[in-house]
Amino acid sequence: MKKRSFPISRYRGAVAAFTLVELLASAGMLSIILGGALVTFTGVQRSVTTSLYQVNAQADQNRVFAYVRRDLRGASNVQIAAQGTQLTITSPTQAAPTLNLNLGLPLLSLLGPSQTPNATDTIRYYRQGTSVIRELNGAPTVLSTSATLFQATLSGSLVQIDAAFQPRFSLNCKASSSAATTATAYVHLLNATSN
Image (cartoon, rainbow, N blue to C red; front, side, top):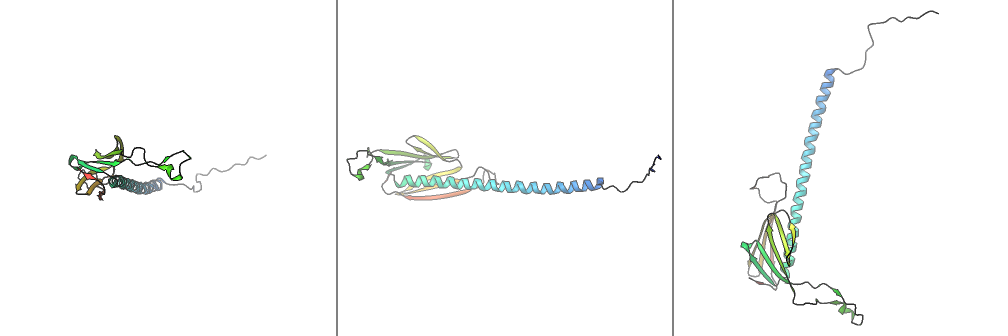
């Protein structure tokens, strides 16, 4: 048996590979593309966050005005104190429907009036820090956490409520920046006396 020998050649065929320059160029282009994507992503994220805080400030505004209007419409007495930053309302207690289980009474008596017809509720509105608080018979409820202004004025039988709300986050974070939402509500008192 004859041994076959293969000549060893110093020249090898062309091998498919990347050069160092090609690798560096592609890494540079990839970093530019990823940097642009990162800038775009953070800009969109900031915009979405700002929009959500703006919507929350508007929801706070709507909630505060809905409560104040409802309470003022049923008010029997209105007092404004502390240069207009505290509003105290006295209104008759809302009669909750009671179910009278005496089946011998007519059907209309099932929804009877309140057991204490002269009972009243004392409702107080005030701003503490950035919160607008509604206090019903001493039990506080926070209506807003983004208020920068809550001011009430009384002129005859007309109550004017001015309020401003600033979201927690804004692109213009200066202390002198204007409020994001401001609103004024006017409520005519039908049965109330003012002090």
